[in-house]
Length: 310
Image (cartoon, rainbow, N blue to C red):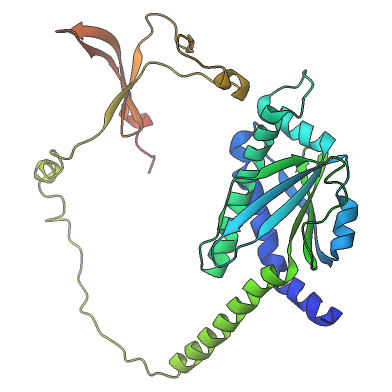
C-alpha cells in the first residue's frame, strides 16, 4: 500500500471519526458533574511494533469488541494517573487515593463502555448499519502484557485529548487499519451509485399541480371549545406520587443491602409531589383510607408555570 492511498483512506474517515469522538465524549457527561471537550485529534497509521512500544507499565489497556458486519476489537490506552483522575471524578473522591483494584477498574470500564456506545452509534449512523460494542475489558499492564501488540497488521491510530477546564487527558484508540477503512470504502461505493441514480432523476420533468386556495375564517374555528375538550376527557394519564429524592455516590449504592435506610431530602410532614406524565401538577399530604394510602391535595401548581409563554 502506497503512502498516498493510505493517506487518502485516512482523509476519508477523518471527519466521521472526529464527530464519533465528540459523540462518545458527550455520552459520558451523564457520569460526571462537569463536561469534557475533545481537542487535538490526530489520525495516522502505525505498525504493530510501534503500538507495542506504547503498551507500557504506566498504562491501562482497554479492549472493546464490536459485533455486526464489522467484527473487530478496539484498543484504548490511558496512563495510570489519568485513569485514577477519571475514576476520582466519577466517584467524587477528591480527597481520597484511588486504588486500581477490581472495583476501581470496573468503574473505569463503565466510563469507556459509555464512550464506545456514543462512538459506535455515530459510526453506525454514518455507515447505515448497526454496530454494537460489548462491555469494555480493562487491563492493568504488567510484565506479561507489556510491549505486546494484539494486532499483527497495521493499525489505525487515533489520538486526542479529553479537556476539562485546564486538565488535559491524552487518549489513544487503535483499530485494525484495513478493516476500519474498508467500511468507509464500501460506503463510498454505495454513495457513488446513489449519486448516479440521483443525477438521472434530476432529468425527469416535474409538472405543476394547482391546488385550490382556502381562506381561514374565525366563524367555525373553536366554535365550541367545551365540545372539543370532551374528545380527550377519556384519555388515560399516569399519575405518580414522589415522596422525595436523594443523590448518592457509586460507592454508597454498592453498599446497599436489606435493611439499609436511605434518607431523602424532604423533612417529616412536608407535602409530597403529585406528578402527571412527568409534570408536577400538585402537592398534598399522605393519608390512609380503608388501609390504602391516599393523597389529600393541598396545593395546585399554578398553570402559568406549566404552559409555555407565547
